[in-house]
Image (tube, rainbow, N blue to C red; front, side, top):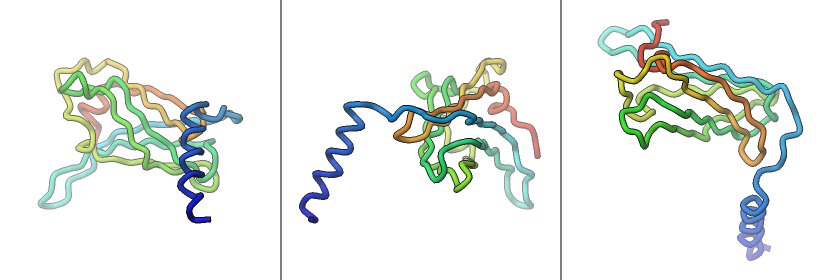
Length: 143
């Protein structure tokens, strides 16, 4: 039985690679994105946090968060992806990252440019997308 396990895992991975993601069979998925600077505590600098909240996702599912057209310093770094989000039993998730986890930002970038934010269920083709302005990441409001 133990000897068959690697073959089973490999065949599952190959099936996903050959046929792509399963089709999405539900609707009503929404995401909301917010960027804010926290108040500095005594002796420390404020933090800039990027938050993506989702609703309507499949319960207990891994979700990839993808940012496209980031106001990054390097042209090769205009995308950022992370797979650490997981929806809860009701299909909600909250993903938060410090802005320092993103590629270095270019503060001369057009602040009116749209940054596309997509949340995609891993192994399923269900996605939700929203836009934020580059200015939200370059000059976040204080909380």
